[in-house]
Image (cartoon, rainbow, N blue to C red; front, side, top):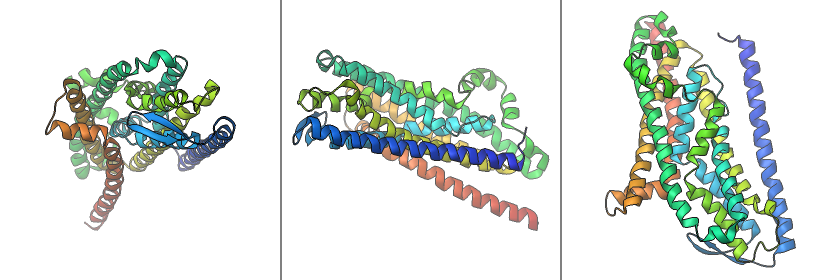
Amino acid sequence: MGYSEDSAKQEKRSIDRRLILFFAVNISVTALLFLVLFGISSTFTAGTKKIILSSGIITSNFIYLGVLALLFGLRHSVDADHIAAIDTSTRKLINEGKRSEFAGFFFSMGHSTVVFALSVLLMTSTRYVTSHLPSLETLGSVIGPLVSSTFLFIMAAINLSILFGLRAIFHRALKDDDAGRLSIDDLIGRMGILNRVLKGLFSSVKSQAYLYPIGLLFGLGFDTASEVVVLSISATLAGLFVHVPLYVLLIFPAFFTLGMTLIDTTDGYMMFRAYRWAFSDPVKKLWYNMVLTAASVAFAVLAGGFEIISTVTGYFGLNGFPWAFFESVSNTYWYVLGILIISVFVVIGLLSYMRYRKYLVSRTTS
């Protein structure tokens, strides 16, 4: 089932070209939308307006709102639940020999669908929804975290079970080179009761396209989606978007989508390349997989745990330590945890490469 070296290089060039095309389209559309905003600003507005946000009142204009929506997308893309879901799903698909280079793209597009759907809904019924938005946010703030944290805990349990098997196989591979050829499918087939319980859940992500509905479910927490919509609604009520067509208002969720897909796609592709490098050699595959699986388990549990605790804290109005700490991390510093996850995966990759090279040297000199 292996590829020839020429086929592998050709596939890599094809994937790289698609990624470059994605970056070119993303950046070009972003620049085009800003040009549109400049034109709209000179046509429909005069000076600046006061915009009402959940965090307070700001003095703004079309350009500032566009930048703000783009920054929302960039910041939200590194939320810990995003990174954990993309990375663990990428690892699973690579293990099964399936394509996963754009898992992050599908995930972010699913999440962005919620933003667009809510935007259209609220923009076409602004007067009604303005008084009902808080109830929508309350419902979404419970459903979204529960869905995402449940998925993360399931992936963590699956990866943990694989980790124990990988560890045993790796130790056998150190003593017997043939053992290194054991595949992940062989490992899954030997899980016994755990395999029968989790096999259906493990197979739920059958291709990278399955990350689209998962991203959509993650987006059911309306906190970020409503923040983008509030930009448009508040601007409309402030007189900034008077007589501006609906498709123009959709520029703001479009900026959010461009920002989020840019980072999530990049993260998914980085993980894809890292796993593909590791899987080029049986023993290297086992070593790297074992290290990355352990990290995936830790971060999935960490992200899912923070979401659950934060949801419980907010729903029941718990105060004081440690509830305030968990809520602060989940609400204010959630993106910091996502950046930390990416950084740790990069460091783990470098350390694993160095450790594996050292292992090869010791094998050849002994």
